[in-house]
Image 1 (tube, rainbow, N blue to C red):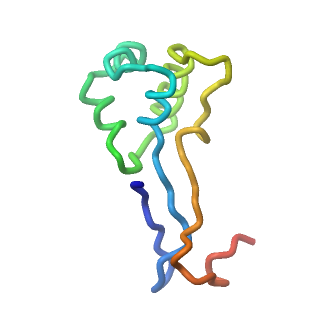
Image 2: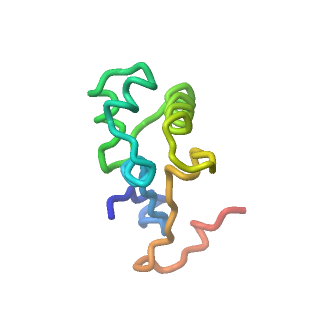
Length: 102
């Protein structure tokens, strides 16, 4: 599982974020070339989005990505930005009051 650790202060926070674009594409039978054509971007741009780490996305790019995925999806349920990102607490880090959201 590939993820990003979020640092707070001197300790590693309990947050693991996983980018799930490859899983979403596989589940819906979406090929990279189809996604690139639907988004009107290059194959290289889609390849960069599919990398296993969390990409930096502008609001416009995320909107185009979700719109294209929904045009190409095989199921009725909409694909949302929340489907593309998975949050899992880090079981190895002790709980810290610094990490709590108020």
